[in-house]
Length: 93
Image: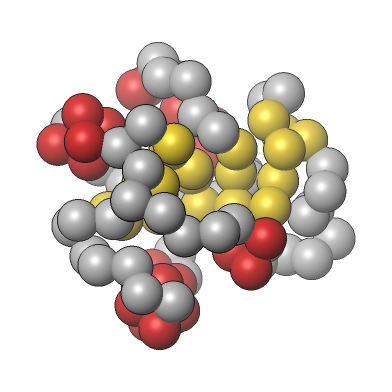
């Protein structure tokens, strides 16, 4: 909840069943989804665009909720891109 209060541009990493459940549970408006599957990038999921992380310009308003079983790999990638765990991104609640 802290991330949702501090960040105005929320993305959910994982355009799939878990991402959908988290979005419905939180009942928030998100900027879009992020997914590592290149076949999904550019398409829509639940009415929101799916991005690759490389398409998103990092800024202090971005918050990411990771809804993927590949949490460790995604965490490492986000840290390499300058994001801070629990500050800029969290694992699904």
